[in-house]
Image 1 (cartoon, rainbow over the protein chains, first blue to last red):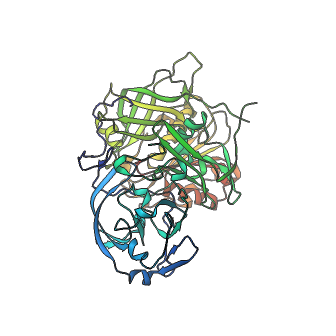
Image 2 (cartoon, rainbow over the protein chains, first blue to last red; image 1 turned 90 degrees about the horizontal axis):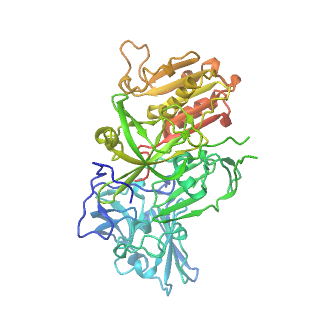
Image 3 (cartoon, each protein chain N blue to C red; image 1 turned 120 degrees about the vertical axis):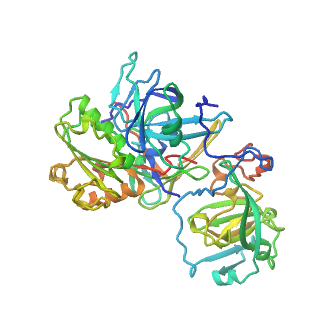
Length: 199
Length: 87
Length: 256
């Protein structure tokens, strides 16, 4: 730890027992990105789901928006230590997208417009644990926060909730994504503080 | 806001990794072939790590993650680095 | 030819505030004593680290505004100066401008950045283009020119929102022989100023003594949007991209 500077407090942060270890509560919504915000036109937006046998299905925006959607309120935990409680989203559950998909794949690789990827076990996307979200706080999801649509997997650190999502590939093998290749924990459970490799 | 900065903004981080100033080092983008000093590259430093992109073609040139007690550096987007040294 | 870079130490050093000075309505200059500091080149910056009692820390970069000095191994150099612009929501800048007092300590590492640097033995004319706090490293270059009695012609084009935000207004380095200063006001103009407030345009960068045919070294510094606009204007005016060095500052100046 560096020397303490007298009187330095830093941005308002609250230590709340409901927080995972090492996190601070924030009331704003920081924007983190690995590159320029992709400009995605709804007419060309596609979401693709590919199975381990190579078969695939895709939805255009209208088709995607015709799927049953739900309103959820979840807590978010970013690996950069801020957490945000009670965020309201609207999205399509991954269970809905997987409804008629026959798969024995164990893993998923998620890809985004702009090239970002992230990986997770398929079971972390199912049983009501993940959505493709298109509304935040009652309004269209802003491009800054991943609009038109992003993955939302709140039980893992937020880098797994890929913004500008364009597809999920179901795989038999685990393929580390953009940050998992470079030191970020392959799983990323905030409750076990799995930020980096070997945490 | 994801306002990108340039390679000057990671001078300290690069010096930690290389033991010398690297902002004047020239890199060749492996994606488009353009060359330029790292100081000129586009840097996104708000992600969980640092992402360095080619100013010409926006391809990822380098990535850095700085964790407590260690760091990881991915230079796959760079064909080479040219570093000036005294004779 | 490889120029000697000032290395300094790779690790964090403790700096003690020896003086503070109001520099403008929104900016303050900090004078820092750094034991073992061996100097810096004009244009370089330092990283600052602040740690709170609970271990929370924040890091930002600030350009050195004082003139370049290089010390030989056993000599100490003068204290260094940083000018900090207060951002209303800035967790670090508000601390440095509102709370920090003489005698307080912060951590810094540097000097950093060997590319965005002016070497006083370079005879080429120098065109400095600064937006807001982007003028800080350019001030170091002007001050270095003065202390080293360099004769290279300098022109500073300084864009600011309003006159109350102007830094270094009374600095003799800016009014020295061979230095010209052109101010651009983007929001509020001084009383009687003949031009309405507007952002930098090609005319602001067209002084013939610093035109492309004179092959000046050009340094552009400030927020990303300003640097992009100014650099594009300079290219349109015929300056070579290789002769234009740029340094972009972010709204917070550092990682979250």
